[in-house]
Length: 417
Image (cartoon, rainbow, N blue to C red; front, side):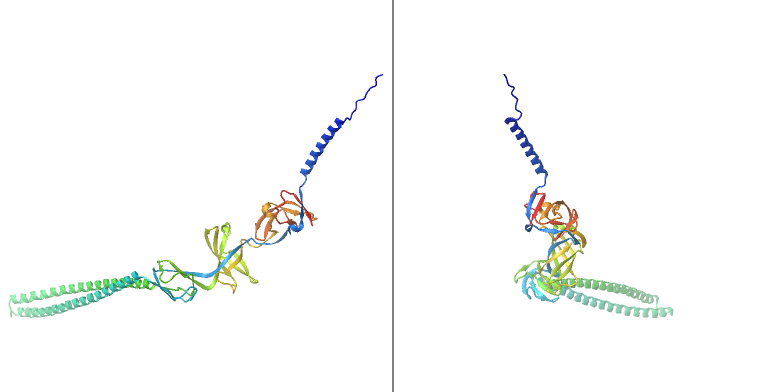
């Protein structure tokens, strides 16, 4: 008799298939679960810097270096070119105004002076000769005028006498007319001599004025030449210290060439180098300060040199209030140059985190301090010590401010002590 054989439901092949499918499902699910969670990294707290966010006074400033300089400098240039013949003082000497520094020799200039002196002497001699000739000429005309006056008086006397005698029929008409003609001639002669004498006086006066003007002009030129020769002796224009003197005996110096400078030591200023990045934010009146010893001293920008050289430009700062007694020319000062007024702001200390985050996010500690997670932030102004926080953090929050070089794309740090 035939027996009915029942078909098995769970054979080995079926079990293996189901197990394989289950394994794939578990693997995919685990992968999804793993990737959807946060990546974590264990970090030793002794190797990181944890800072607390706080609110406090904030001022945007930049550190700059300044060199102490005399408050004013007078440059010495060669007014006239020449060869250095003699040096009266050495570099670094304290000078008084008018004190000679060096002497230059210029043969051409000295020869021109001698020629000009000769020309002036010749003009003066010619003036004296012309004056003497004019005087002799005037004397001659005055003598001639005296003769004319005398002849006129004599002819007038004879004319009047003959007129009286002619009226008495004592003389004839011919004799009377002769006396009358002679008188009229002497009258015209005196009038002509008067006119000549007047013209001669005016001409002599004009000639004298012209010669005086010519002499005055030549004398003025002579004085100018003497001054040019006098400028061959270089003198200190003001009281001060002679510095940067560049001249040796026998050396030729061209007109306008720099010989040295006089530093006025009645006060000091500070010449500061600033990165060109800040050129649009620098203006007269900005304040700065520096610490020397145990005291802080204030400075103010008074002059800006806008020429940029090697990526930097310069400003001059003057002391406000007390000036350090120990300060010296050429000394370098570390100055904090303020770019804004002091205000209250939310602050985070500067650290290496900025290089990796660009200030867009930071690792913020949880309330229990066991972990730190990414938090989006927004930073504003900065100075060498702090960043200003505009958004994302509040006072009392703790953040990791050290560098993030080894964290990669980690979303969370597990802090281990």
